[in-house]
Length: 80
Image (cartoon, rainbow, N blue to C red; front, side):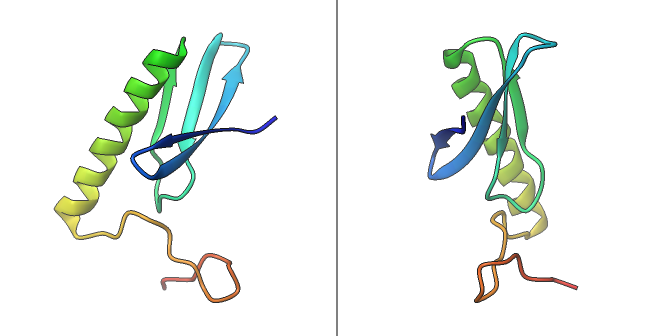
């Protein structure tokens, strides 16, 4: 089952990690990693906002586009 959490127009994929008994989220549209963990939904949303804010601040600081770039066929574009 896929669970998607929408935070400020960004989507995060959510799963439950049985070993840690915590929810784990990862933003899927970003060009880098911005993951987060929490034990309940309210905390998960809070941690997601913090993770996203920090990621976006770093992108802004370094002049990097935060979202993945896609080619015309829908596949991620090569940036090298």
